[in-house]
Image (cartoon, rainbow, N blue to C red; front, side):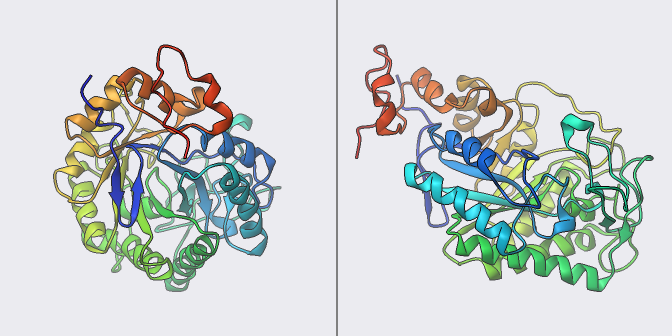
Length: 369
């Protein structure tokens, strides 16, 4: 069998990834006052034994009010940093998989119930609710309280929050930061005309709508060690008329690249409840392919990538440089093992698991070091 492209290494800044499979950030809505706990240790610990090349911690709020829900993870004070540190220390005792963290501000989509409790917004003044902010005083939905439009002081506070979280991530030894500029959260809200109605230097033209996300990127880049990588997750389209387009996503990706981004992770949607998403296997891969055509840095594809042959084709055809797994790896935490078996490749396994190597795949596990 020809060598699998999915299981070839890739260097991102100074970090060499063992293969092209990364675990996407997946919110667990299980933190208490922003602090990670045993659930996160269990959840992330099992994924750190998956054989993927990179493990990404879920959307992590840079300020308390930046959380999507009251159950979101934060990295904004000593308590949240210590809690995350305990989980990371536990993982690293048993796995050498690099760890990334996705830094986020939810903007107008903040202050919500947990998804299994309906996910509705909680109004300010109600238990577990707080006032929200955004680029403009435009609510995400008719039943949401409109956010306060951010002034210059509010923008500065958020930039500083991202930078402070980046410094805390560096102190924890985090290998990679991903900046969340997708899914209708604050940085995407600035980029999309659906949510950005400003008339100052942060609204109107694409250059203006990109200004604040780029300022945040610059603040994070200045605060995070130069030898460690920073990626950006964007939505390739809003999937609504008059919204953010793939052409704008291409242009903004080149801007992030020019500012020093090391990779672009291409997702989509999240800005408007009327979005019409053509969901199907690999439905976002064409968006990744479009971004890859205009940048030189690695591009990550995500979205219903469940079949190893499909993932192999995405990398082999040059549609993207990496594939990200989310729900797929929740359903099957050993998906990279199974993909390696199907593609005739090898994958890392902990010494404690070596005896489970199937007799049909005698070379599946790399030799212990």
